[in-house]
Every structure is written in structure tokens, then in C-alpha cells.
Image 1 (cartoon, rainbow, N blue to C red):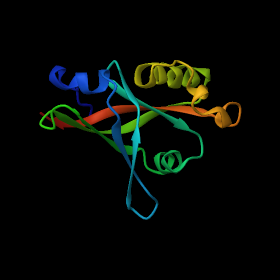
Image 2: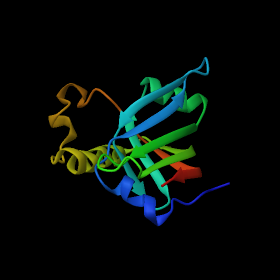
Image 3: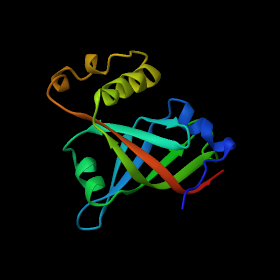
Length: 136
């Protein structure tokens, strides 16, 4: 069952707010990482590299949670529970991390910050379909 992100919460994913991204380790322990995110239509997109802990967790259990809190108003927040419905490991994933780098860091060349990763990692977009949204 899909859920929509209400208009009054969308700004939290349209602004450069670092979000908490929660996955589940194999033993059930939550694993949370601060990440960049984007709102693409009705989905939340997160970008990471193939083989990292969150990548391995999602492939075993695609249920995830994203938490965004407005740094200027902690009463404005969104918790988005959902499921990764697509893994995009194409060149579009590099384009997406460069887009996020431009939004969050002001430089659309992600690998200028992470030169050791260039050519050494496969970027992945995790396309999350919300199933429940809470927030204020």
C-alpha cells in the first residue's frame, strides 16, 4: 500500500537537509546513516555505493525509513517509512549523486569531494516508495 507525502512536508526533501536513513542489519539491529536525499515524483531517492552496509541491508530487507527534521524548526519533521522498489545502478546513479552534490555542497562534481571513489565504486539509487508518512 502506497502513501503520499503531504505537500506541507515536501519541502523537507526539496531543501538541502541531511536526512537519517535507517535500514536493518541481518541481526535486526537498526543501522542509521546521515545521507543526502531527493524527492522524485512520489518517491524518495537515496544514493550510495554498491556493497556498503546499507546496500547489503536493503538487498536483504528493502523496508527502510527516512527521517527529515527542519534544522530551523524541530517541530517541522517527516518520517517516511517505505520500501525500496528499484535499484538503479546505471549511469543515471552518477548523474543523481552529482545533482545531490550540487544541491547540498554547491558543486555538481561529487568526485571532487570523493576522488578515491571515482572509477572504483558503482553508484546506486535506491528508489523508495512510501508506505506510511508521519510528520508535522
